[in-house]
Image (cartoon, rainbow over all chains, first blue to last red):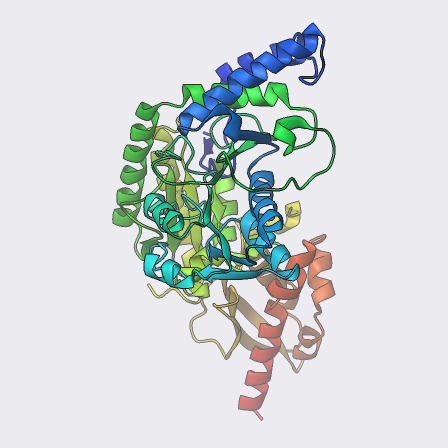
Length: 382
Length: 126
């Protein structure tokens, strides 16, 4: 059996998406900037796709800028706002649990003379709204908070965050790569100025994403070249990718999410019941429908990952031993989880294709693998 | 990422277990870093010299930490104390083909554990 439970990393492209994309490689392959029919046909599709994505977050089509994915969107949002608004101030507020695309961009901006405040989170991964309010100064130009955390699935109250930013007249960016389509994003109601989106987390193709930028926002491009995407993102538009992205958004279905949530809770309950000394990381209630993050105490995550992989089960881990930097997940550490425990964390992320049989199969081998590794561990006392 | 030999030792380790009544235990690493080992030895005699008669390791750690622990036991078992002390990181890695670069520093701890166990044994029996 093969169980792909790493849908937080990337997803299988839906057949319908593949089918939608193919004609834009073989037939309507024109450059959307060209004046001839080939180009204009591509341009028409580009605008239709833009509309589909805009609608999904209650935005206007002209507020959607296509990019190469979540990382580029985060870079454009943060650097673009920082560079365009540095006369107003040089202070940015973000959190300790952002994706590296935000964290490392903030580090870059710090080296460039900006001041960045990294908000703490509680043990479930939530920021403290009072701390956010207190962190705001006259110099603050942007607040960037991840919508649903990629590792532990905690969903922040972005409506309240958006309101605080609006009251202080500060731009609000959210990395919504994991949450997009899985939970409601309403840029008007939630007072979002910028939102990063990606296709490959929602059964779309890799290499395509978008940044929502509210009309009237002062932002600078970060790449020089042609005038595509409202002069904000140079480079020939990736029409097949954009079409696939729009199709993925179009077919995203609430029923699937309910089903994933049911499977998620089934899995958590069963693991908690059948494997001793485990811990669910993150929030039980405000949690992404497809995210499960569990610590198996006294063992190390990479070893468990490889054991599961041997049985065809694909997962990921927050253990340091799996990262090139050899540091445990900054998200788990920020949540106050001791490094020794963070090493034993495993993330299982479901998709609409995940079945109960796959989860039962996984739990079965999980039990076996955890026991084997604990039997080898000097920390485990039977 | 890992060689077949690494995977073989990881999947079917022969020495990853606790030992009852060891003559000495060497402890290395700590759980905060993600690697911790207890190396157990039993000392015997052969041709008038003390040898590692039996050895086992308990390891909390990644694939590399577990397989290098197992290899150290293979290399040390039956060796005289003097020869066992000479086992190097390079010997272990050679036995496994190779290890990912970032793993060499942190996960090849077992030979330190072995040296500690030997040292403890020798101090105890001075």
